[in-house]
Image (cartoon, rainbow over all chains, first blue to last red; front, side):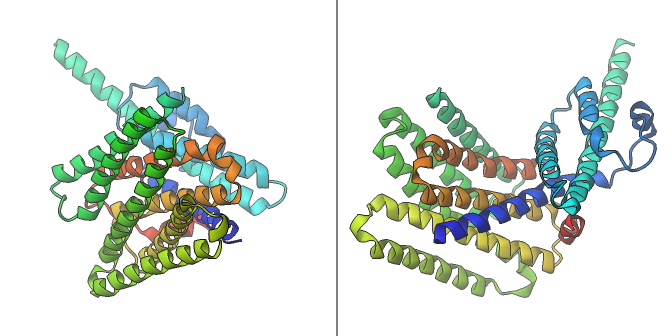
Length: 136
Length: 234
C-alpha cells in the first residue's frame, strides 16, 4: 500500500520536475530575438514558430558546424519534444486542453531550435571570416 | 554486453562527478558549495568501489547487491546535507538555518524509525536486505517531499538565481525517478533483475550530468523568475 502510494506520488512529481527542468532550459532561448538571416532561411515570418517545425529546424542545425557547447541542450529538448508529442497524441481525444498545452510547449521547443540554428549560423560565419582573414 | 553497460555507466558517473568538483574549484566555490562537492567526491569514490565489486564478484553477486544498496543509503544521507544547503541558500535572508537543520535531522530519524517499524512488523519473512530496500525507498521519498517543499519555497520567495533553480529541479527529477524505481521494485520484485538493475545506475548519471551542465552553462549572475516557469505551465 505504502509502496503504491510512493509510486503514484513519485511519478507525478517526476513528470512535474522534468517538465519544469526542460522549461528552465527553454526559458533563456525564448527571450532571444531571431535574426533576419534565420527568418529568411527558414521562412519564419513572425515571433511564433510552428510546433511541427522542430524536426526541420533540427535538420538545418545539423547541417551547420557544431559549436560543441549546445549538444546537451539540444538532446534534452529533443527528449522533451518527443515526450510532448507522445503526451499530445495520447490525450488529444480524451483531454483536449492537455493536447493544446503540449502544442504550445512544442512551439517553445521549435523556437529553441531556431535560436540554436541562429547561433550556429553566426558561428559558421565567424569561422568563414576567420579563414578568409588567415588566407589574406 | 552487460559488463560494458555497467562499465560505461560507472565511467560516465565518475567523470561527471569529478567534473562538477573541478568546475567548483576552478570558480573558487569549493568551500561555499562544500556539501555538493563532498557528495560528488563521495559518489565518485562509491562508484569506483562499485566498479571493483563488479570486476571482483560480478554484477549478479550478493556482494555487489549489498555494496550497492548500503553505499546508496549513505549517499542519500549525504544528499540530505545538500538539500539542507539549498534550503539555507533559499532562506538565507530569513536567518532560519538552525531550524532547517533541526527539522532535517528529526525527519531523517523519523524515516529510519518508520522503516525499522515496517521491517520489525514483518520480521518473520524478511531479510536484512529488505530493510535496506525499505529504508532506501522511504529515504528517497522523503527526498522527493523535501525537494518539492524546497521548490515551493523557491517559487514563493521569488528566487531568481537561475543556477539554484536548475540545481533544485535536477535534484527533484533524480529523487522522483529513484523513489519511483524503488517503489516499483517493492511492488513487483520480479522486475528488479530484468529492468531496475539497469535503470537505477543510469539514474545515478542523471544528477552529475545535469549539475555539470548547470555549472558549465549557467553563469553565477544569471537570473530568472522561477514562478514564470509555473505560470507558463498552466
